[in-house]
Each structure stands twice: as C-alpha cells, then as structure tokens.
Image (tube, rainbow, N blue to C red; front, side):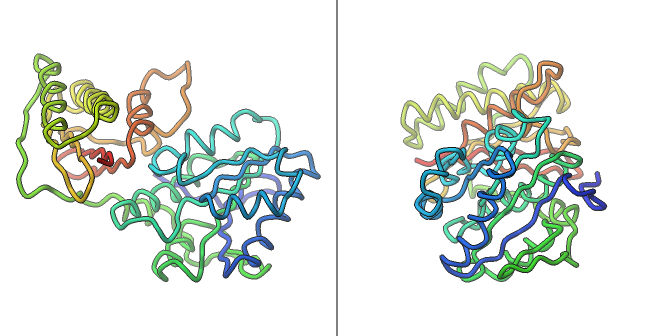
Length: 312
C-alpha cells in the first residue's frame, strides 16, 4: 500500500499541517483560509474542538453561516469516524468543485489510547483523497502538544505552515506512520473468552450483552456494543476464516469489546468510506465506527484483532 500524495498539480489534493502558537496565530492561519475559500466560491467545512470552533465562529461573524461547522470533540470522538462522517461528508457532495476543510483531530485532551487511531487517521487522509480537488488544513497546537506529536504531523502532512510560512516536510512518510499505528493492542488481566463460528453467532451476541451488563453499561450503550460485536463477529465468519473469539472487559471507565480472528484487513479504508451502492462490503465496519467511542485494530501474522471502546 502506498499512500504518498506528491507531485500534485495546482488545485489537486493538499494536506498541510498548521503548527500554531496561541489564539492569534491560530486565527491568522485559519480565518484567511476560510474567507479565501468563500470568496472563490469553494464549499468550506470546519471541524475543530469546541473552544476553537467558538473562536472561529466569533471571528468569522456572519460569514460563519456559509460554513459547515462541527465540534470535532463530538463528531470525531472516535477518530475512525472522521473520514466518512466529517471529511467525505463535506467533500463528496461537491465532486466537481474544489473543497476546503479545516479538520483538527488531535488536541491536548486526547489520551494515549486514542492517539494511535488519530495518527492512523491522519496518515489515511493522504490515501482517501489522493487525486481529489480537496484541501484539508489540520491545525496542531505547538504549545500544548507533545513534541513527538508534532514530529508525527510532519510525517503525515506533505507541507507544514508556521507563522505564515509554508514549507515542504522533509519527514513526510505517511506509510511509516500508518505502519506504526498498527501495533498490538492492550489485553485484559483476565476476561472470559467466547469462541464462535456461524452456528454460535447469536450466542456470541448474548455473551457480549451479558458481560457488558455485568460491567454496568447502560441500556442504550449496551445495544450499541452488542450491535458492534455482532457485526465484527459476522465479519470474522465471512472474511476471517469462519470463526473467532470474543471478549468483553472494563478498563479505566471504559467497556472494551474485542473480536479476534485469522483474517487480514488488507484495505485500510474499509469502514471509513461513505456508503457506496456499488460496494456491499465495509458497511458493517462503518456502523461499528459510528457506534463506538473508539475503535482500534491490529493486523499481524496471526490474524486481526479489533477492539471497540464505549464509555461507562
């Protein structure tokens, strides 16, 4: 898989990182991007954490009414949702026009558990929009984020913007970033393991419900978990060798559901595209990403492990 998007002609896909320091630097790097897009007749979307969203809305004034504005803390709480539900949702409605998007998926409140999924998302943007007339500007708080995160931004973005100056990133290597995000997942100290095949698919769903109820998950989120586990188990039967194992446990205020099988996830964008009537696969994983607060996947020599996290 190659996700490098270089050699771009003017007006094709661009994915710069804005490394900002403070409010004024943030506004100086984002507001002109929005206003220039509106002046050119480009559709513009903004999805950033709520404090920055409020800053932009106030600074843009009445122009904000012409911009699709979303709180990334809500729509992007699971980084695996952002491609389909934020970026593609904004860009795919205008396939014949240049689209401008500001997306800020990484902020100081992200946890160590979430970060690999954020890194994977930023790397996959380059594959998902290669050849498209789309510009996706990704702000990074240079004061509030760890230097290692800023180094990763240079690896997942072909261009870096600092204090109004744009330069090419010498570290740009999104394939490497995507590979690093594919790492073994944390395991419970103890959890019951349920083995399933096609004949035990219904029993697997009952097992997931029972374990999540015991963990204290409320009824609405309980249904979300059972749906997600059922889809993952069904995928194991169809694509993972016809069988797999399922576990449910709690960890630091989260309920974790895991499905493991012998299959390999060869398409890194499966479950991250908007529904396509011409494609029947990927819709189950799309729903899993929509339901969960976080999804982590690891594909290794022995197969694929997917973990779904829901807050208690």
